[in-house]
Amino acid sequence: DKVGALCYNLFHHKAIAIMVFVLGLMIQLPGDIADKDWLINLGIILFGHSSMDRFFGYGLKYENGFKFTHLGEIGKK
Image (tube, helix red, strand yellow):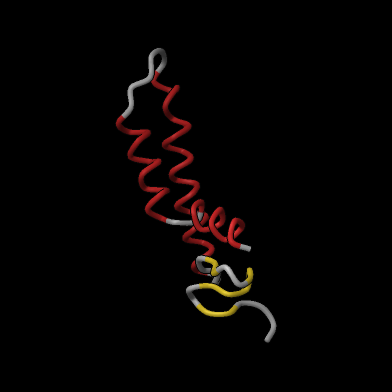
């Protein structure tokens, strides 16, 4: 499914996680400094999650199915 693969890849791409983290460092929201911490934390969580997925062999998805990734086929063969 094209849309599923696109959404999965968007939220599991390390560059997106880094961009969210840097955005959290750069923006200055009015009020308490804790207002921007959620972006920093989200960037850390996204990066850690995508790194853990790569460690366990789950890569970015291809359109032809969830088990087909840039790291190879996952699951029982």
